[in-house]
Amino acid sequence: MAGADRVMRSAIAGAMGAALLLALPGCHRKVEDKPPPRADDPVLAQQKSSILTAPIEGDAAIIRRAIETAVPRTLWSIDQPAARCIPPQRIKLFGKRIKVTPPIKCTITGIVTRGPIRLRGEGQDIVADMPIRAQITARDVGGRLKGETATGAAMAHARIRLDLTPGWALTGKIGLHYDWTTPPGIDFLGQRIGFADQADEKLQPIVRQLERDLPRELARVQLRPKVEQLWRQGFATLGLNARDPAVWMRVTPQKLLYGGYALRGDRLRLDLGLEAITESFVGPRPTDPQPIPLPPPSRTRANGRFTMAIPVTADYAQLEPVILRALTKRAAQPFTLPAIGPVTARFDTVEAYGTTDGRIAVGITLAVHPASGRIGDTHGRIWLVARPVNNPNSAEVRFTDLTVTGATDRVAGDMLVALGSSPGFSQLIATSLTQNFTRDLDNLQGKIRRAIAEKRLGDLLINSRIDRMETGQIHAYGAGLHLPVEAQGTARIRYQPARR
Image (spheres, rainbow, N blue to C red):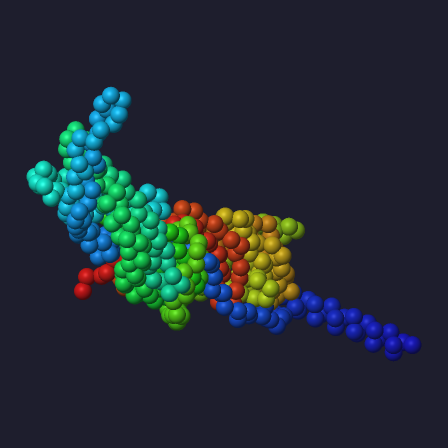
């Protein structure tokens, strides 16, 4: 029994001695440093669907030439021998009508021509104004009509409604209307001899010919090659920022929209739109999109609105000195820890990376010295693991789900963990990230605004304007801390061949 007591007292004394040795400044308790696991997920490319207006303008002379080809200058000629020009003249005598003069037969000859064609627009109609002039001569057999000449004028209006075939050929329907402003005729024996009926009879075949020939002439307009060039050159990769960081946008067209046309002055504009997927990338230039065959026109009016993802991604290696500078600046003032009091800290290194579940891990190597002097300096590393969050449309970062662990060289090393868990410590790191993101976001937005204001793609000139920016939810990927930003605005593509 006495032997057992001796063994128990010896064990207690040994344990107390070991505890005292561990508490002495020169003695070390080494705790294994197990960093949080590293994530390796990449920042996902942001895909957005945009619709860019892409009007194609051309000289409206193509329409005028098509009408002029279909309608000859000389519309028709008139040659009517033995026509009855003037009926018998009768008078009343003793209540009876008595024939005084015989009917006058004559030969009518003449020519009807058209003048220069003028185009104008009325909504979706293209109106071709076509002046018509008739010059007609009447001669009778007996020589009483001494080569009397009649003139007349009409204004014909051809209303044309254009359309596109599925193969991007230009076609159209036409209706021709006219009225005589000065009906052709001559005055003889106190009456008017008109020839409008003869002219009308000749004009009807011209109307039918124009309705038949104009679509064929329009089909000769080589529209498809220009549209195909627009389509092919739309598959492109645009550089938005050259470096720090390099930012790219890849454009992959999906549809070509056709929303009608308009005639403005001497320019015919087809309202086309390009519906495309826009993807944003940070880092190396992505592979160019592969063009697909030109699809048929989609009957939708383009609104010119585009949406573009602006990837604001911070590499963790770029964030580490930012965090270290913020900690070093704060270390000029003591930290106050519960039950310990004021302590001074020295921060040596910072390591940051993405860990699991969209969180960031920040490892800090530091030394802490209590102002009381009861405990010596404590050296070690602590790990803060937290989820970065931000409010909508804000680059201000804060942390949630915070955990702090550490590995130190003393039993009193829990003081380092207490420092990492102290109020305001994690906010200090969050503030440093906020300042970095706000500065980077402002710089990148300015660069991108300038980059997309006018961008050339071969023979295409893109003019864009950013109207608003929306900031999404920050996320810690393995490849970097990412703040998604969406830019919305208007964009217009013009076909403007580059100078060779």
